[in-house]
Every structure is written in structure tokens, then in C-alpha cells.
Image (tube, rainbow, N blue to C red; front, top):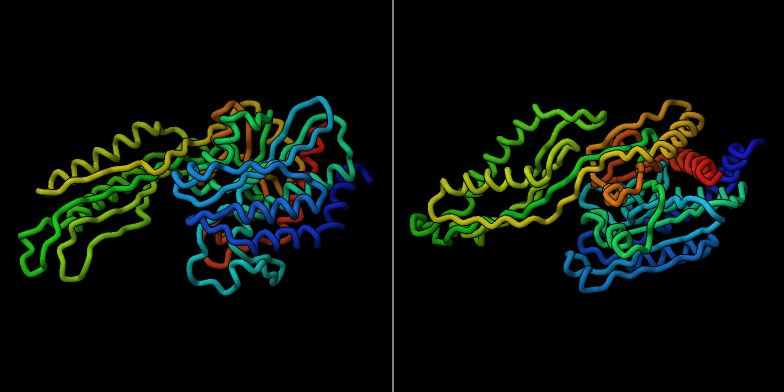
Length: 407
């Protein structure tokens, strides 16, 4: 057998152990919010140590975590030094949205049925804690690299923008890789992604008794006018097309609305939160300015109403750096050999932590274990799942790719 076949054989021989590793990660909740994720980091560090991978723990100061709206974060970093050469970092995140309703499997059970593993973060992206850890173990067992460095970075604030995870470690120069790979799916290597702007809009009117509505100012009616203006803009976005394959057009979503005090009371205050996805060609400052203008113009049509607009998150789009070609070439070549089909390089409408590395001049791509689409994975929906064969094969692709990069 050649080295690639030996790597594949090692992954096959240890796959049951890899699945158990992932089950243990799924069984420790990391719902964000509330974002009490340090306990998961402790368990993950213990599991990694049992694999023979000592871990650096980088707790984020409580004040910074609380300021971000979370409860606890400890970032984990595994460093493997083989000799002179480039450093390749692999990053996956453990924080997830809460399970929600409609599950037919325990969201924290790691249950296996019909070749799939079920649970929140089974596909996004606790699975890639195991993909990357076992690919690294395969590489060291089989190829015994003598040059370069590999780092595994596991973080816990991707849902909130990544500034306390990769962003913090990059700013403090704890990490400075030459190349990086981030958690993704198996049937494409992603080289670009959308940006995201999230805003909280508070519409302030004047509360009044429903029997004398004219004595108040209805914040909900004003909010409806603002929302109609935003949704009208959302329709126009469909005509704005991205040139990046895999990305279509900008779009806007209002995900949360809260307001009012009782059925028989004119609502004096309504708050809603919006999510605006930006294609790589857009300018984030212009996008935000346009949204603020639309909101202010609509509110101005409602006498007695004021609005407060607060930016919650700004995640820039990921634009490919020329230096990512060794990553793309290796993943495409080995992906086609292992999966038996071409692995295209394209963009995704998601946003990720990889943008933070690219903004720091570090070329990166997105690749890991998962299906062809987010929809198939049930990510952020009930019964999130992962095909175990995708996990097995993606681990082989990453192990082969690391071998190429360390050679």
C-alpha cells in the first residue's frame, strides 16, 4: 500500500473510536445563547488528551464574554511541531443554536440510526473536532511527518461572530498559521462566503389603554410600516447577483420580534432583530447605511415614534486569497479519489470564522464532514444529522491533504 492507502486504512481501523469521540462531544450541550461553553471545552480537552493530544486552554476573561452576551468560553489549541516548515491550522467551533422543537431523537444523545448520527452539532460542527483530530492521529501514525507544524483550534463563539475565538487569538498573536482549514461539508471546498450584518431595531411609541387608542402612539403599527419597507427592499435584492459560484443574491430576514404588554394595551415599544446577508461584492458600510436610511424614512411617516438602531454583528464576507491554492488542489484531488466524484471549489451563502483569518492575510478554505447542502444536514433545525460515511471519508481526505502539506 502507498501512504495514502495506509492513511485510509488507519482511519477505517479507528473509525468506531472516532464515532464514540463524536458522541461524547454531542452529549455536552453548547447552546448559544446562553453560551455556557467552558464545560464542553473541558470535556473536549479530556478526550483529546486521551488521544495523546495535549491541549492548551485559553479561557476568555469573564467580562469580555459577558459583554458579548455569553456566559463562558475556553478556546482549545493543540500544537504539533515536526520541524522547519509552514504551519497549517484546522479550526472547528463547538457553539450551536439551541435545539428548538420537533426532534425525534435526543438532541444531546449522539444516537445512531441507519448509518447516521443525530444530535445538535452533529454536522455543524462538532463533527469536525473528530474529523481533524483523527486525521492528525492518522498522519502521525502512518506518515510520521518530519517538517512543518499542525495546529487544531476549537472555539466557541462562531454563532456570535468569532471575535472571542479566532479573532482574539489572532489579535494576541497566539496563532499565526500560514494556511488554515475550517469546518465545512464534504462535497465542495468553499473558498468564499457571504458577510452578515445583524441589527436590533427598537420602535418607541406611547403606551395607552385600548379603549382610548388615540391617547397613545402605537409602536407596533410603526414597526409594521418599517418591516414592510424592509421586506420591499428584500424583494429588490433578488435582482442583485453575485459573480461567485454558489452564492446567489443578498437577502434580509427578521428573526425575532418582541413588544407590547397586554392585549388591551396599545403597545408602546416593539423590538425586532434583523439579519442581512451580504454577497462578497457588497460594501458593508454602504449596506448598513442603506438599512438605517430605510428604517428612519419609514419611521418618519409615523407621528410620535422614535427608533433606536443598534448593530449587533458585522461579519465581513470571505474573499479568496491567492495563497489558498495548495489547499484547494489537495482537497479536490483527494476528495475526488475518496468520494468518487469531482469536488468543486465555490462560495457559500453562510458566514464563518474563516473571514478573520483571510482578513489577517492567512489563506483559508472550508472543508470537513457533511452533506452537499445545509438543508440535508438539518443544521439549525430538528434532527440534525450526519452520514457516518461522510465523516469517515472526509477524515481520509483531510489526512491525505495534511500529508501533502507537510511533505
